[in-house]
Amino acid sequence: MTQMPAPTPPVSNVPVSNVPGPNDDTTAHTGDRWRLIAAGSVFGVAILGALAVLVLWRMFGMTDEAIMPAGRISTSAPAIVIDIDRLRTQFPIPGSLLGNPVTSLAATAADGSVLFVGLGQAEAVDSYLLGSPLALARFRAESSAPGDSAWQVTDVPGTAMPSPPEFAPIWQRSASGRPAVLPVSDVLPATVVIMGEKPKPGLDVVLDVRVKVPGIDIVTAVTAAISGLCLILGLVLLYFALARSSRVGR
Image 1 (cartoon, one colour):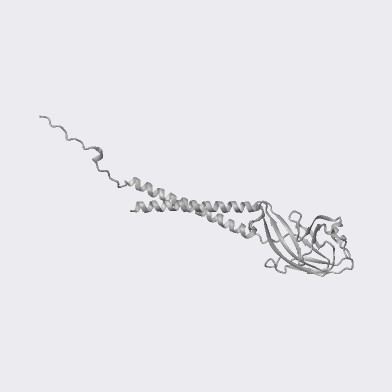
Image 2 (cartoon, rainbow, N blue to C red):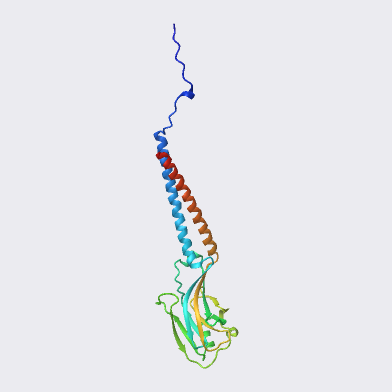
C-alpha cells in the first residue's frame, strides 16, 4: 500500500527569524554613516554662515552703513582743508565683495551747529580761501587705532574771512547738515573743505568714515535665516542617525 506524504504545516505556523542578515546590517551602517556625514556638512555650512553674520553684524548691525571714527580736528581758523588720497577704513572685507560700496566723509560739529563740506579742485580752493586763515589737516597713515588724534594740523595765518561757501561756484560736490556727509570714494584724490555755513573763527569737528552698501542688511538677515535652517536640519539628521544606531546596537 502506497504511503501518503506527511502534510506540510501551514505557513502561519512556520517560525520566522527576525535576526537581520549580513546585508541588512551593512546597509543600515552605511545609511547611518551617510547621515552623519550629511549632518556634519550641514553643521559646517551653519557655522560658516554664523561667522559671516557675526562679521556683518559687527560692521553694519541691521543697517546698510558702517561707521568708523576718524578722529577730531580743533582749530581757531574758520576753515579746514584736507587733501585726501585715500580713506583708511579698517574694513576686513574687500569692497569688491560688497558690490562697490559708497564711502563718505562725515563731519560733525562738537557744538551741534550746521557744517558745510565741499569738494573742489585744489587750485580753485586755494583761490577761494586766499588770504583767509585756515587749517591744513593731513591724515597720518601710521596712526594706530581709529578715533585717535590721527590728524596733523598746520595753521596758515590770514586776515580775510571767506565768503559763504554755498555761493562759491567752485564745488564739484558739497553737503550741509548735522553731520555733513560727503561721498568721496569715486573722486579720490580730492581736496575737501570743512567750514560753517556762515564762516567764523573756530572749528571743533569730529570726523568719521561711512561705508554704505545698499542691501547688505537684507543679505545679513537672509544669511542668518539660512544658518538657522542648516542648524535645525543638521540636528534632525544627527538625531535620526544616532537613534537608528542605538536601535541596531540592541
